Length: 119
Image (cartoon, helix red, strand yellow):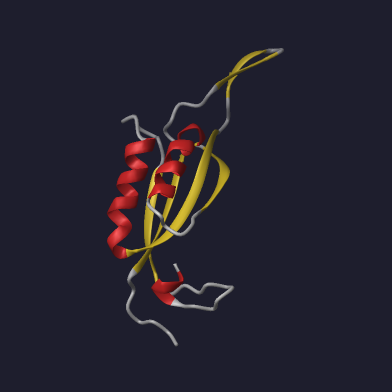
């Protein structure tokens, strides 16, 4: 059975690694059912770390970030975005991005339940 009405969104965010712990806690408190995260390297507007080595100091080529995603029912989108921005932002440019896309269907692998109830 296919669902034709899209009532779910995938929220994907990239934030500085040091901001992830409070965001992780905040998302857990929302009782979302689960989310996936991993460490990534990237280069954006945020100032990169200055690294010291035996031959002097140099600016790192990339920033260490955490990227994560969660699929939620439409009514949770603003709450999730507000949680991420309130816990990860200091107001400086280049602190990350949040992407929101529509999800047509989901399937729980174990139970084989489809759609919103699989979340």
